[in-house]
Amino acid sequence: MTKIEKVLYTGKTHTTGGRDGAARSSDNRLDIKLSSPGSSGAGTNPEQLFAAGWSACFIGAIGLAAAKAKIALPAGHAVDAEVDLGTTDGAYFLQARLNVSLPGLEHDVAQELVNAAHQTCPYSKATRGNIDVVINLV
Image (cartoon, rainbow, N blue to C red; front, side, top):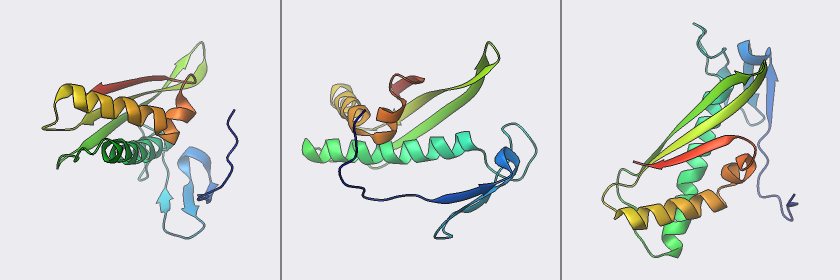
């Protein structure tokens, strides 16, 4: 396990009520209701939050890879993340797909950026070897 030498940021939240509760960040910029996936609750769920965080971070990692390669990212670049919550033998697990769109870039160039991003994105590092992850260039 790699130890962090210098902490750049710490996200802090306070959550009550679990999947049917609420979460608020220490700076009050995040203040959301939570609800279980598939329920009629008014809030979001942890899988959606994880998908949003990972896709945002992955776009940042693509941007770093593009800058290093001196490639301009195309307008309309995006990542659609899908995080599944499921069970195997009665135990809960996650799996994920990142569907990356880099319109206008040659496929080989886009694939190189995606591969580099998957190696550097902290969310990708955290999930590598822990959950099934598929990265699709769409």
